[in-house]
Image (tube, rainbow, N blue to C red):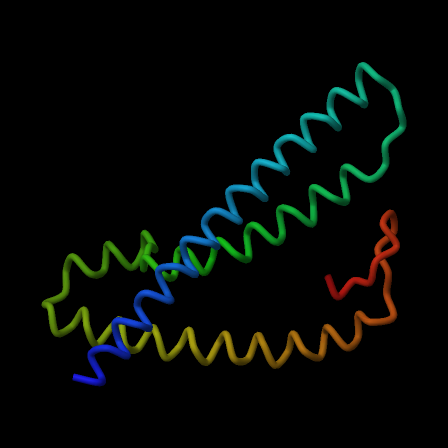
Length: 136
């Protein structure tokens, strides 16, 4: 009984975290659209010489894309894998999902390990326009 309550608590936490990340992605993408729209209007009509919009929209896109990967993984949405699942029996699907989960875990652990090194290397580098560290 205790394991079932832990699992449901874990599922509730995962659903809430994914709900938050989905809204954050929508906010980032919406902000990116507004910033790019402002950049176009500013460049062709207002001629204010704003230089921050391109870099800011790039950061928004990178963060939105990286966060959206977790939403896709949460729902197990991958078009290539959905096609493969159709041709496998139920046990084959479970084996494939477990194998892919292990491969993904290994890849993300590698990415985290490599990312820590990249973060340390980026401590001394600063963004061109904003002057903030590239760790962001």
